[in-house]
Image (cartoon, rainbow, N blue to C red; front, side, top):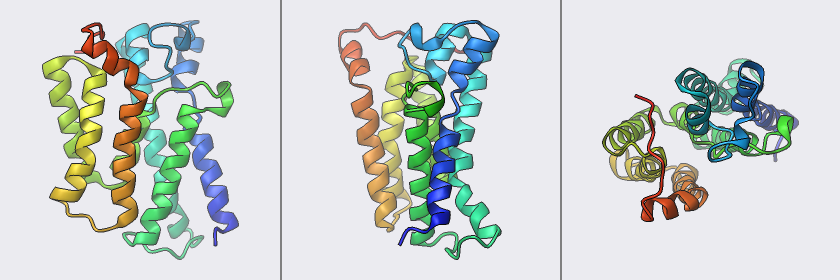
Length: 212
């Protein structure tokens, strides 16, 4: 049974995820709504493209922190004796995954700015770091390697996302069903949300990043 405390935590995670850093930084400091330029996404990549490195780094840090903080609401609940789930157990990880999904939905459909958000890659990075730090760091290494060699953020995001379930299953040999399913679904979701990027990559029309 889902308790009122868990429902409240999920709502808080969604509200944290809804913090529209790209939109607010653009509007407050640059008088610009990043959703009206570039790819139209309210995320770190488009912020780098539209507003530059300083704003992009700020959005990247805030958005990844949203995911990390939301997942760690489960730990806070445990420390405050609001939950009897033990860290590291399957039920605890299930709660972490649910909180992460709530934050991700908040980023993609933020209540504060008309439900028009980003693709959630930075937020997802924070979620994965909180849930399985080792696998997330390896996937981040894959992301950086592909980005440095190709300069395509979209390609880097897709390959890194696909690498996560591979690392989880083959390298760490995770046996928790929900974590395995989550990692596979995330990889599929990232590929689906990057369909236009895939088309542009195939046509050799995808923009390269200039963030180094």
